[in-house]
Length: 152
Image (cartoon, rainbow, N blue to C red; front, side):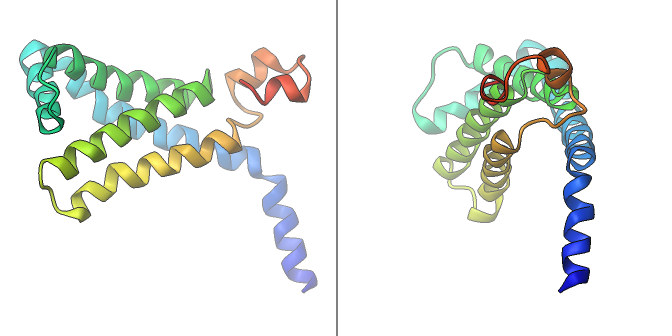
């Protein structure tokens, strides 16, 4: 039992390093997926945004496609930097839940629709964990009280 407490103590003391590693890897992954969408231009944005037709939304497909590419690219960048971490994570939750809804409405297999759902749930969880000490949010707001910091 003592060895378990020791291991738990080591892990707890490295929480901020773990959050940093997470932010870097997941941020890079979202940038990796978002940049091609962002650079695909109006034709690509229209194709991406047209997928919302599965939900009965047929207005402004180019805009919604661009918004999706921006969400992944800039959301990934902000997550990586730990800047506006919680609002960006919440924005990505919304984007991923929309992707899940589109997958399900278009008749995709549940296994295919589960990927954006799982990512959305994951981001919902990290909203509560916060960006950690090694983040721009922490550097910019470390003078504020703990209550105020929890709102960032």
